[in-house]
Image: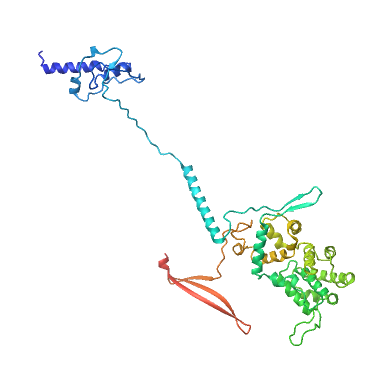
Length: 452
């Protein structure tokens, strides 16, 4: 069968392709066969190739263009056994593909978020410090410490920042003398026109009545004893005021217990206190010549008189500060401040007397009692009105306390209208002594449909 020249050339080219791409197990031979298709191959330059562990597929790679294959010089018989020549003009290109996966950093993000919140809180503290003049960081709140010396005596170390707290509270109380103890304390309930020994007896009686009783009730009971204990009290004919007090040891002994109990019936435990007052009057008349004892031991020996009353009586009646009178207010507030951790007022007294300067023993009771009656209440402390607020000095401070406005608000919904009523009350003192109550009412109307 005759074949054309074009068919013979085509068959020779395909035979050459089939021979060069024969599948072998050696990757080196396959690499040499592929190298023969490189452009510019002249068979003179040797190229060292790295051995590959992977085998080639038996399927030959397709040629990019048939003219390129036909133009290859030389044949496969002229190839060298140990190497394959390749053109140095064509560089070897390696393409690397890399998959990028987003890294999971939730913890890092949370840390950054927390750091951001800390920065905001720190900036707020700095702004608050600039406005109030208080330190931006909490001050140390170390309680008082007690140790025993080699000689056996007790040594006390005062709590941290106690002097700063004391000065702030003292200045605040001096600027705001509005507590009941400021005008109706036991040391102020004696009759000014009476002799000194009777004034001391008045102070002792007021202290005995003040136990478990408010100062206002104690002051009212003392006023009745001054004016109503005796049947005929000497009075000023022009003013009607009592010239001398009826509260004396002799009048107490003469008074009927039922009548005495009726005069002090508003105080707590008035029946027991009536018995104690009668017993104390008998002891004072027989042992102290109608005066009161001038020692702690003598005062504590009286019926119904405890350590707190004895120390307060020595300070107010005899002007001797031999100890600190600690009541529930002093005991509670000093523990709130973190000065110590005590369970009874007597333990608080021992700790305070261990480190508090002696010149402050007299004033601390009245100062803290007034604070406990107006601001640092047993229930519902008004920390926002305290001078220690925001200064990070009080260990028991209630943070975020806001003073409530004294307004009465009432909302009424009627016929599709929302009505808000604000009512303010004010008292105006008149010249004649009366009081005029003025009310200011402001009404606001809003449509209920607008609020929906």
